[in-house]
Length: 436
Ligand code: AMP
Ligand code: GLY
Image (cartoon, rainbow, N blue to C red; front, side, top):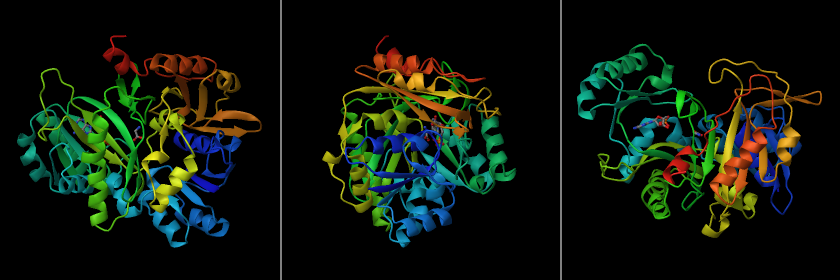
C-alpha cells in the first residue's frame, strides 16, 4: 500500500515503524516526519497542519491511506478535506475531532450517551461559574473548553484558586478563544490510564491498556509535560474492566456521534480515572471507571509502548477503520510487555536548547528488544541533532514489565547529548502495586 503518515513526533515514528513491520511491504511517506522516519519513509517538506498542501499532495499522488497523527490537523478538518478528494483517511472528521477539541462538546456527548464521567457545568460568565463552585466541593477542576496545549486544566485546592482560574480564563483571556468557555468539574480520585480504541464508525476494538507519566521528574513531581514515558499493559486496567470500557464508554460515544450524523473513524482515546481507593469512596457517577478526557488520535508516548505489541497486518487494520469494516480479529495483541522512556532536552518543559549532537543511537538500537523512536530530531549532514523538548522515545519489550523496563533503560544508557535527562521510575505504579 502507499501510505502517508501526517506528523513529526515519536507517535508518528512508531506508526511508521509499525507499518514497516507488516509482511506486505508498503510505500511510506511522512509529512513532515523526523530523522527517525527518514530511515523508513520519504519525508515530505509539508507541515502537519498544512491541510491545503497535504490535500494537494494526496490528490496528486493518490495514496491508499492517510494516517493522521496529531489532533491539530484533525480539528482543522484534514479528514474532511482528504475525503472530498476521494482519499481514504484514518482519523475522524472535524465534527468528530471535537471530542478532543471541545471539552464542553465531549461532556455533552457523554451525558447524552450515559457515559460515566465527572459531573460538570459549562460557563461563559465568571460570576455564574464562581456561584456554582460550592456544589463541587474541593478540590475542584477548572478547564478551558478548547485546545490549550495541555495547560488548560487547573486543579484548585481552595475556592480562591478556583476563582482565580475562572477569572484568568473568562476575564483575563488567558487561553484566548480556547478559554472563552470553562468547565467546572468534579475532581476524580484514583489512578489514570489510557485506552486507545480503533473505531470504524460503528465498531470498536480496544488496543492494550497503557499508562503515561505526565510530570517531568521522578515520583510524579514537577510541572506537567507532553509525557515522559509510558508502559503497557497497565495492571490497573484488570481484564474484567475491558468489556466494561468498550460497552459503557467507547461504543456508546461512537453510537451517539453516529446518531448526530458524525461517522467517527480513527482512534478514540479515552483518558480514564480508575477508582481504586481503599475506603471504597466513589465518584458521583457511581462508577469505578470514569472518563477524564477524550482525544481524537493516538496518545504520545502511549503509542510507542502499545504499537510494538500489536501483530497482524497493521495497514489493513487501519484501512478497515477508514472503510468501516473493522473486525475484532483485525487486532492481534502480543503477550509481551512494553516500557517507553522519553529522553528530553535539559530545561524541558520550559525553554531548552536545540541542535545538540547526539551519539549512541546505533548502539541503543542494537540492544535486543529495544526500539529507538525519534520525537524531536533532525538529520543534518550525517549527524542527528536534537530539535525538540522530547527528543527520543526508547521502548523496551520483554516477557515481564520488569524485563521491558530494564531493556529500555539499557538502551537509554547508550545515548548521550548535552543536557539529556529522563525519568528513572517508568512503570513505578505497576511495580508498587505488585509490592516490587
Ligand atoms: P485533560 O486535558 O482533560 O486531559 O486534563 C489533563 C490532566 O488533568 C489529566 O490527565 C488529569 O491528570 C487531570 N484532570 C483532568 N480532569 C480531572 C478531574 N476531573 N479530576 C482529576 N484530575 C483531572
Ligand atoms: N499522553 C497523553 C496524550 O497523548 O494526550
